[in-house]
Amino acid sequence: MAEAHQARVQTVVEDMVQSLEREHIRKMQGRMFRCSAECCDRSTDTMAQVHQCIETCHTPLAKAQGLVTSELEKFQDRLTRCTMTCNDKAKDLFDSGAKEPAVRSLMERCVGSCVDDHINLIPSMTRRMKENLDSIRQ
Image (cartoon, rainbow, N blue to C red; front, side, top):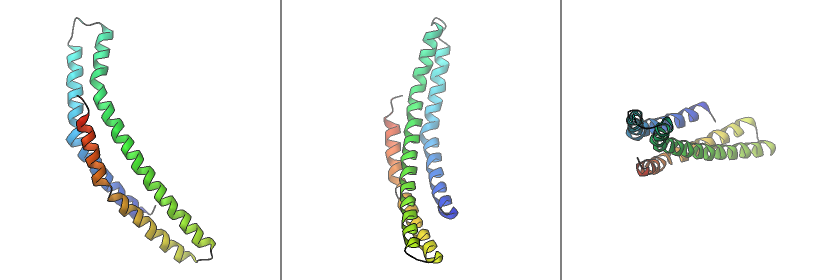
């Protein structure tokens, strides 16, 4: 993918991840640490009970991080498939005898279209992730 297109996608995705981190993940981390500290304050529990308590505290955050990672991987896979289709189209055009400038132009337009389409998916993906993060039991 051309550098400018890659930078556009990266900026939008980073902004989304930072927003999710500020509004959801960070709060979950705070709850996890406070919960874990309370586990450690239980002086009558056995070591195994304290470890189990801490593990239970970590579960919601682990689910949240897994959810975000999974969504980002799906997004990346879709974008990669789209750009691979562009590569195929460019190769087919080149194999049919087209000159390099025409192939480059096709590739630039096609990848630009992939990027635009996928950037337009970010708001709905963000909304879905926020809803899913909100539904994780604390």
